[in-house]
Amino acid sequence: MGQHKVNSSKDNSIFMVTRSYKKIRKIFKKLKKSRGNIVHVVGAPGTGKSANIYHALEEMDLNIYEIESSLSNPHAHSQEVFCTLIKDLKNSLGVESKIGVYDKLSNFDAVLFADQFHDKHTIDSEKVGFSEWTRKVGFRCLIFYLICVKEYLKFYKNFQKMNIIFQTAWRIRIRGKKYDLFTDFGIFSRVILIILGKLFCVVEISYSNSETVNIVKSHLKDIEEEKMEECINKHGHRPRFILNDLKNK
Image (tube, rainbow, N blue to C red; front, top):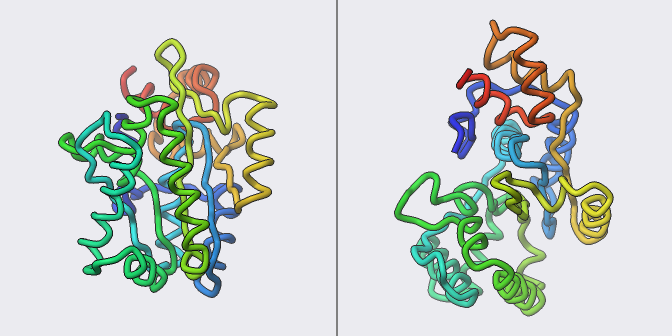
């Protein structure tokens, strides 16, 4: 994983305000006074979804419960993954039932599913992050989503008392390069986002060329313009990939 990857708010020592960030900040601001919101933060790999999420949470001073993965079996069945998640929450929150879990979570401004859940394997080599698990089991992971939908419908009134923020990605590897189903496949991705936006609140993290340049320069002040433009042409507006590439030149 690249050295510019942000896994928590303490990694956000350098941050540039962009149009996407202003949108996410506006949405997060409402979470203090409302409940029942489900927010999906989407963006292509390398655009800094985590950086934007953590910075906005800190600026809005939201009381957050961040979900972490303790899964150790990369080939676990979907039911096992769900049960492990609920067991972890019971232990962490000091309750004995799912109702107790949901009641406790409703006391927070929002529940966050971000890198500590999705990419835990990059933080703790003994754990399996959700993204690693989905990569291993493939389309069988769809059963997990169905379990979650069933749970949401069964405990709908409880979920309406809490806010949930998802760092949302569906990663696909093609010839060794990572793509995101929600952002990297043109019209198909646009259609998916429109459908997702009808059901939930969706914020897409993306940048203009000038914003990308400013983000890169905030990290590498003396970088040569020619090298930077070369990397932008190669990686698109994905600051983390550009920065990692420039660091290795």
